[in-house]
Amino acid sequence: MQRPGKLASLLPLAAMAALACVTYWLLQATLPPAQQPPEQPKRHTPDYFAKDFSVSELDATGTTQYRLTATSMAHYEDDENSDLTLPAMRMFQPMKPTVTATAQRGTVNGDVSIVDLYDNARILRAAGYGDPQVQADSQHFRVLVNDDVIETEKPVRLQRSPSVMTADGMNYNNVTRVMKLFGNVRGAIAASDINGGSPK
Image 1 (cartoon, rainbow, N blue to C red):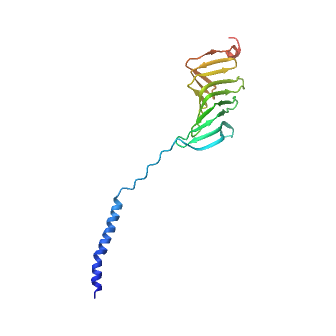
Image 2 (image 1 turned 180 degrees about the horizontal axis):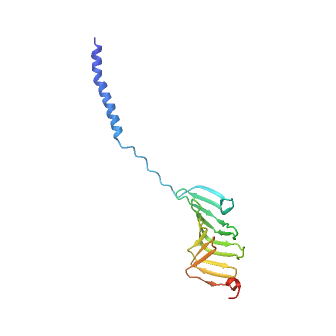
Image 3 (image 1 turned 135 degrees about the vertical axis):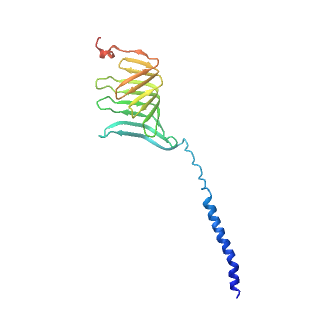
């Protein structure tokens, strides 16, 4: 005879528990999503290294178009650039002399489209196919790999056979083989470099 009274007294407690559950669910449903911790910025610290680094790009026929080598490389996670020690960049064009760019140190961007060469930087176009050797020296050269262009905004010394020129800047297109000198251009052009050495 006492059981119905106990059940009746438990009904309000059950109703309150159900109400508390519904209230908690509604509260959770309307709260803004938890804030994610802010993503830590990448630091300019090396994330991997390489010794005797080498990378080449081939054309559709499998022929090497350029090859970049260095004695060591350090890659940075924040900008995807890499520091190079004793880099050498060689560019190959069919039926044209090989062009080699070297320096004491350098940097290369993530997709190897821009190579910067610093300290005793040198561009050497080998002799061949009717052209003499050409050498350019500066403290900085930038190789625009996709355009096959080498440029500098630093003073440059250019030597072609016995001819010697100096300038405040240079742009060399390896496809057209056109070299432009900028700023204060000075030098001496040998007779053999004027009209192919033939008299006017």
